[in-house]
Length: 186
Image 1 (tube, rainbow, N blue to C red):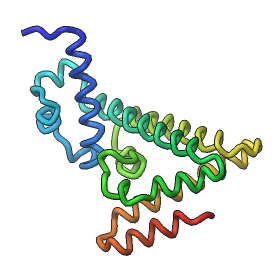
Image 2: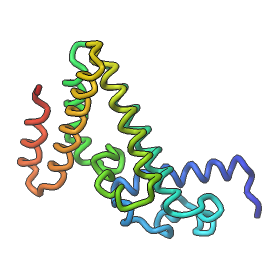
Image 3: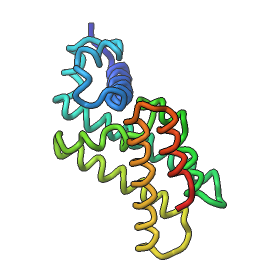
């Protein structure tokens, strides 16, 4: 049975969204094509009609996840005009974000794996990080571009690192202390 172009496009988007969440939950190498396609409600054959390779899907799913990241950063930065950096720290280092890797930040879940994959993944991370930094700089409003970018880099790195460490420990109280220490102003 032939699939219409619209159905094919919707199926492709569903695979990208599902892969984006599954990769953030299980890592790039923790998700096989068969498992992914079953979770997407499609057959393995549909994968090869939509994507040239798993690496091609990795890049697209990562771009999708990073786009969601940037949207979250922008919304949070715009929601608190008085102290947008403090707002992002509260949002990013929340229990909800800690507990939901699949819907959370791709920096904290996939960045360490990116160098083991195709160069397209690195370019995708470059773009996503630059977009996030641009959003942080735009919220700062000081006008000193060099200082603003340094502050943005420090802020982003601190929050991502804190989330990675909080997720790595087994003690929930220790995880909360890690996050709490990094929610505090610099």
